[in-house]
Image (cartoon, rainbow, N blue to C red; front, side, top):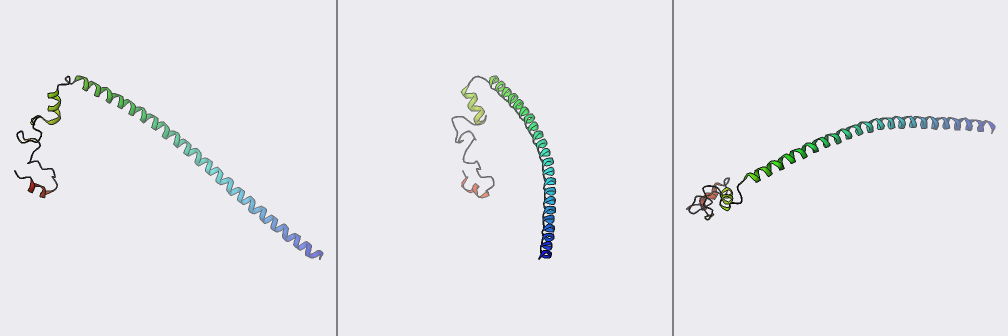
Length: 129
């Protein structure tokens, strides 16, 4: 019986040592993974900071361009003649179209000969005058 207890004790000691070694191996593996993840995190933080700086620079350039555009637009609007209805309508309709004849019967503007479907050759059949 004493012999059985000693054998059982030796078996338990080996098992404890095995579990201990497995635990240490697992701890070492997880420690290495943590170090790798910390390095990856540092790289991602640097990348994020670079992207933040780039965004700030591009936003600043966009704001400058928008400001220049708005100034130019204001300059163009101020340089146009004062609300002359004939000039405004002429610029919107076109110089060859009579502003009172929007159907184009007399002026050659929008009219019955206009091809509204340029990709569809069958649309010309109903456009005869």
